Length: 581
Image 1 (cartoon, rainbow, N blue to C red):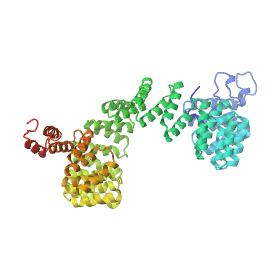
Image 2: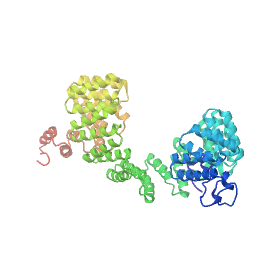
Image 3: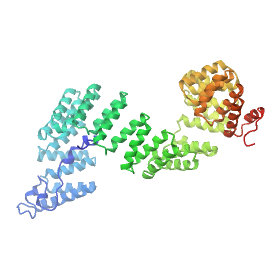
Image 4: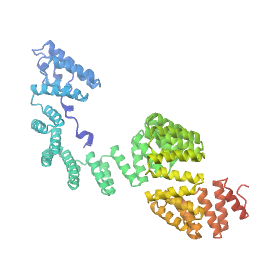
């Protein structure tokens, strides 16, 4: 059984209005064309020059339409209709193209002509009913839909449009009753149940909606739209296993349906079943090596697993296949940045900027890369471009303040951030960066004031809690309050390595070295090359008398930060020389 996709459900009814005639004999003339009984060479009488010309333009219109030359086809059908105004077949072809071109008024005029010639064409009643419904004339629309159903009971579209019209007027029972009549036709029951499910969902009757979706799938196990809808409901209900089972059941009999396998992949990624997701993506790529979406997903899944080299391999392949895809280009640049391929990343983000000239993100990430490289002049230049594209985005202002502070241009940074705070006084990101800049300028009392203000505004601001608690620990003041603040920060962001380092350092300052070591070692798990964390661990081992361990961590600290004079002094106190000296 062929798959029914959502795009099939509302196929414009006019697509089947007329059969394209062949051009090799009298039998090719469309039924209803006056020239059927009078085509030259047919051996029948009654041919006129006008009818022959009409037929010629009709065939030329069919050929032009098939070749995608819509405007040319419309002209040919208009000429044919003028030459043979009694042919409803010509008018129906013209009507289809007028609709396709968005010429609704012309289409309406053509439809009226068809009605006069042949009022028993079901599809013309459907068109008129649809138009009247759009004009908010439901009573007249329903009569035409009903007449269309009488003339062609097997046509799906008038049932659906009639049900929608009843629904818009609030007559739910008639809407459902219309679809029940459609469901009585065995071949159309799946679609009928699907639309009944949609109506019940809009009524807020989720149980009935679920029931009708299941019925639709029972009638047609390959009904993709119903399966996709039901799977989404299962996900919302917190039953992803049911959604997965549904997709896999479909794929057993429709294994070639890539779109469903991609839906399954998205579900698996949400559930963090990355290996299983990759297996499904491999199946897609084995059949469709050029599927850029599958390559993109394979890259994203590998990136989630922090397999950045593998992720970049797939992303680059996707980019080759879709060179003008902005999102893929940005992903490639992001992976290059994570792999410290900074010059490549700058080039790639530059390509993204050309693809989307009004997007600020490429310029922002170029600034981030330059800042990472220590080239803050270039960082500022690109950051300013980003701000010009998104002047109200506070994260850009905050980052510019940080870059200016890194350049020791503290007054400029403070002016910039304070102006931002005046415009958005409740923006904690600007306040937070402002507090940091004051600290770096040496005005900790101002920093303390700002951080307390942030915490009062937003008690869940874990970064402000952590910053203030750690700063107090560094200064050896307010240690009890520091402990309380940092614990709150860790409760708000469990497992954050930098907060665990802060908590360990507060315990160190309190002289609770065993507890300090516990959290500092946990912090190392997420920041194994961070010189601050390594130095703190070395200090703690020294305090508890494990000098070998202290030396080991001090040496590792110097490897990560060769210019750390404090650690050099600590090593010398322990009678050790820094590694390599």
